[in-house]
Structures are given as C-alpha cells and as structure tokens.
Length: 377
Image 1 (spheres, helix red, strand yellow):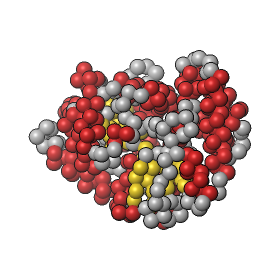
Image 2 (tube, helix red, strand yellow):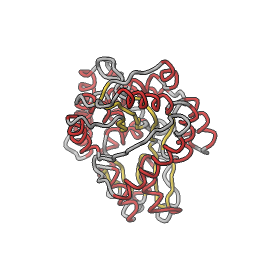
Image 3 (cartoon, helix red, strand yellow):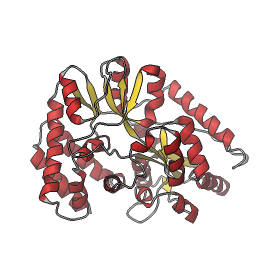
Image 4 (cartoon, one colour):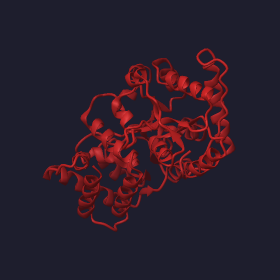
C-alpha cells in the first residue's frame, strides 16, 4: 500500500479475494501452490521485513513498485533475481533497467504497470478538460482540480511542455540546448502559477485526492489505476475516467508505475524453486492478458499481451504505452534513474516542492534540477 495509506479490513479482504482467484487459476501451472498474503504500507514494510528476515521467517515473494523493491534490495532484504532468457524476451529492456542496481543486479522482476489517468465526478464536471489551458479556464469558473505533487505524479504535465528533454540531457551528462532549457523553465513556471490558482490544489498524496473526490471537495484528480477499486466502489456510475490534459507543446505522456516481484532471503530450496516458477509464468502473454482484463487496473509488461489489451479495452491504446514514441523513451530513462536512486528522488522532490510553494524561482529551480541530474550520471 502507498506510504500514506493505512491497511483497512476492506483492503485486506479485497486483496485476499484477488489472491484466491489468482491461486485457483494457478492450480494447473504450479500444482499444490499455497499463498499466504500479508499487506503493509510502504512506510512500514521495510521494518517489518527486517524483523521477519532476522528471525528466519521472511517472505518468499515481495510485491511492490520498482522504487520500493530497489530500497529493500539496498537494505539487504531481497536476493537478486536470476532473469532467464525467456523472461528477457518477455520484458522490454527499459523496464528491466528500472529494477537494475548499480552492480548490474536485477532486484525485482517487472510484472505489471499502473497507468496514470484523470478521474472526475460526472455530477460536478460534465466535460473534463482536454488541455491545461481549459483546466485553468474551468478552475476560474469554480471547478476544483486536485493534483498530486510528487515527481512521478507530475511527469504527465512536464511532457506537455516537452520539458523532459532538458532533464534527460542533463542525466546523460550533456548541456541542454537553449530551447530545452526554456521549455523546462516554462513548465516550472506553470507549476508555480497553477499552485496560485484558488481551485487547483496540489496535495501530498493520492489517498487525500481520492477521499476529497469521493466527498465532493474535488471535482477532478490525477490518479493511478492501482487505486481504481476504491473509487469504483464509492462512486459507482458517477466516476468518470479520461486522459490527462495536453500541454501547450504536446499531449500528456504519463509514465507508468512499474510493479515488480522480489525474492525474499529466507526461502527453502523448494520455496525458491516454486517462487521462480511462478515468476516465469507471470510474464507470459496468457497470464499478463488474463489478469489485466479481469481487474482492469494494470497494464502488461509483455508487449505481446499489451497488443491484445489495446484491442480489447477501447481507448487504452491512446494512453501511451508501447507506442514507440520518443517521449515515452525519455520518460522511461528519467524514471529508471529515479527508481534506482532514492536519494536523487528526494532531492528532486524538494526542488519541485520549493517551486510549487514559491520558495524557489522557476529559473533557479531549472538550473538546480539540471545540476543534480548531471552529477548523478
């Protein structure tokens, strides 16, 4: 669960129901498999896994987003994942890069991707904005918008200004062009200006956005597909979903939040073998397609399965993944650097926060972002 969430009985019940369905379908693939799930918030999972591992009772599999898996690996709570040739063929290299550490070890197996989209209350907002300019207009007319302020939550808006090219140039140790720098400054200026608008709220976490949309305090939010079940249960037919609004230079090109499976350190030989068999199976097209279509909250990592999903869920092919766009490749490179370096993430987040709350000018922030990324390359 995200760090800002507490694990409720409803969360545990929903998770166990999914795992029971998952286990039933695996009977023919991994006979005799038994799953004993435990659900934790990100803020508590490292200390809990450290306690369990030190007592010899750590889990066989750990499921979380790529950054969490990297952090647990750095804390020596996970074993490197041996990637087979079949798995390498089933997973794009850019996704494997996001779970590869500085020693070249794969810390977790990419399994699925959560998408970023816009959710809105159909009772309050009849026509969601297709551009940032229209969002500004609607906010001035009384519509209330909520945006999460973390780096990964804001990438979609950066892409609308084509500001990511300046960051990826710095990440590669290169000097951004004058045009690239101008676009980065323009995006940071938009962040500051948007935060000054009365009806555009930059909030710290997705949980707050969700609660306020359900309660009617917000009319539109940027959101991750991982938490759609909570919104669907609460809002039912009043929940609307759409693409994120385009910027002045380009359509929004959101990143994905990569979900990975890591290997615990206390497994017996038999448990490790079973875990690796399960990991081998889960990235194959049938498994990827089946669970993506069943729950409709995640997107496959396997390109063959993604092609099937694009055909069977109307409109999803427009979201961004596996379309070969250069903006997507740039975004993946930036996210790979962030996912593999938690300290870098915190530094970048502090700079973004300073811009949103007016503590740093957009020009100075642009220079600082470029310096930080260049020094990390």
